[in-house]
Image (cartoon, rainbow, N blue to C red; front, side, top):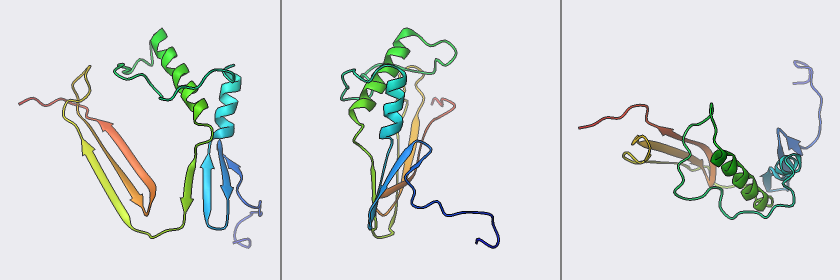
Length: 143
């Protein structure tokens, strides 16, 4: 490949696009500890107490991009506090069998404000998640 493309060997991957990579002979651990710590430091939240859940239950946070309320900023602050409590978490990838599994789920009118349905799926290769998607249906059908 060196003869066809201009490239150089940079060694083992350690940090890329906010993701730290720790490798051993049989596994990789991906985490965003450094990235989250930088965000907390930038926002002055390094000394805040962490939350055990990312968002309060039974709180409707629909789309308010154009006109966010104070409650939305409080939700972002809570999410950052949750991330502070998960700094030691990461994704652990090991070698294993290449068995492909796919799962899907849906609900009927589960979104309370607009009564739209939500569907989702995830695809796993061995024990590792390789793809996932959730989607709120664009229209409401009534019968």
